[in-house]
Length: 250
Image (cartoon, rainbow, N blue to C red; front, side, top):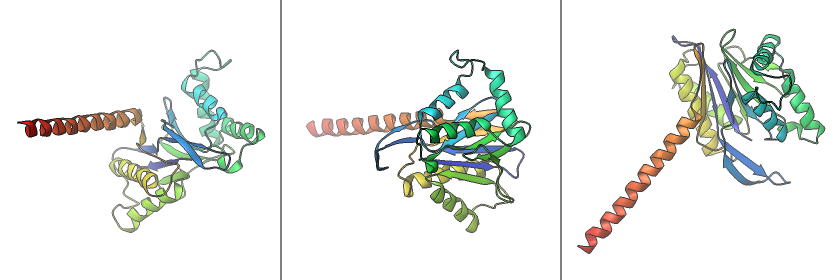
């Protein structure tokens, strides 16, 4: 019930992974029909890792995310920031994220739908810059050979189609994806899925850039910029209307 895109650079002076996600959380009725929605930043990140989820937005996922965001919370016994980093590093080293396998096992045990089980795109900068698909069983899967991007979620078909069209029409070269191209493709692919085909995905964009130097999240900045621009333009419209009325009265 989302669109997530991950693109890894394969050229340029900056080695990076760009993760993009829509920001619409949809609520469904018993028949699977969308009955309500609200905005939410879905991605989470730490010192050397970032995760973008797709699948059902369950209590299990919320609890897992809270643990990732606040590892020092006293509610989580025998857990802290160091143990969180060890958990992530172990998953990357073994190519198996056991905790996500357990997350889905608990979800299915409670009657969850396998097709809506939790999957992730994961980016890390330690020990090197990498992009993975974390499947429902916790397996870390790298992009296919000669392919620098991965897409998941209900908007996967539309987002993938957009990216492939850019390559087929020679707008971008699959062997020349620098950071600028990766960020542009990521943004436009999520936007394409959200606006053209997938009613479960909606803008604005959430964006994370994973580089060797660190991880930068831009979701709040993008959302605030849109809200400020909207407020500014609306005030301009108000002043135009007021000014027009004043001129009419003179």
